[in-house]
Image (cartoon, rainbow, N blue to C red):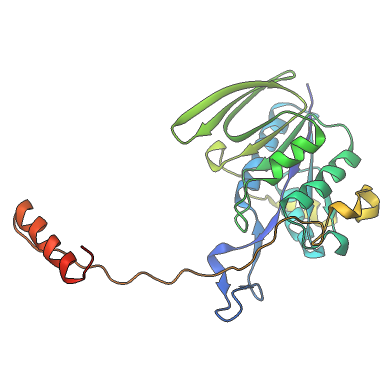
Length: 264
């Protein structure tokens, strides 16, 4: 059986290189390299594993962002995706998670038939974990987030969903949306033949009119939330070691120190 899979991906700044302007509190993006979002790489890898196991399976990667996001899409194609779509329009700029999911769900609806939508759990630049579930709600399909194990047989999918204190074993039918975490798999590297193919591939670029999205539901003005301020926490001061040879001495010296600082 062959499947039609859509992978939602995002180009994000490399958080290892992020710096914040101390005066404005905004991120300094100039000169910061952009990468494929980590969890989205796991989402793509799981789709590629299905493609390896079921010949005829096709994978379409969709993203929303500026024109340079095509670089990330080329990376996805080089890893083994079959098609790539970029939603890019000034009207979409500044969208929060709600507005972003409106645009992406409209883009997916334009793509048409699909069996599975994979997305990363969250993006490393926002950490909201909201877009994937919101897309599923707007498309009216079942969803499971935080997927750490995956199996498929026909139209039935079995997943293990990670929880803070264990996991849930869930079965659901296609079509559906799943969000991946890093424990799901290890993303593969691009390969030479794939890189050559990706550089020649025509990436579709759709604007707001192409996907037929309501302009009152996308963009900065339509976003019910916005980032007030971004900042780097100040480093904590040096700690103080409490001396003592026994537990009793340690406790006494700790109390003395706390009293000296008027903490107790």
